Image 1: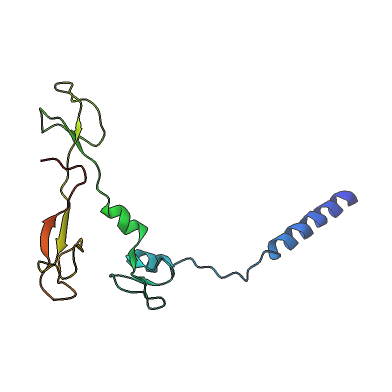
Image 2: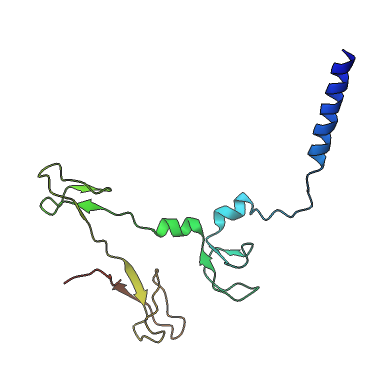
Length: 150
C-alpha cells in the first residue's frame, strides 16, 4: 500500500513538472478567427498584414496577394460534355450514357479586364474597374488559351 502511494506521488510529480515545463514564451502567430473571416489579401512576407482589398504591404511595399481561401474560390472546376449530346455534362471524364462516346473537357472562357489604351502593356485584372495610370474604364476581354485552336 505504501509503495502504491509512493508510485502515485511520483507519477503526479512527473506529470506536473512536464505540464509546467513547456515553453510558453513563444509568440503565437495564429490569426484570430474574426480577422481570418474578413481576410482576403495578405503580404507574402508578413502574414500578419491583412486587408479586405488589394494594395501594398506597409512594411515592405510588396503587393498583397489573395489568401488561399480566395485562390480556391477562383479555381474553376472542369466540366466534361459529350460532343454529340451537349446536354450531357459531368464533372469527371468518362463515357456518354446516351451514345458511349468519350466525354470531352468543356472549354470555359475566362473573362479578364485591361486598359483600352494599353498604358500598362498587357497587364490584366480579374475585376472591372479603372486603369490606375490613365483612369479609363477597363474593358472586358477573353483570356487567351495556350491550347486554343481556331
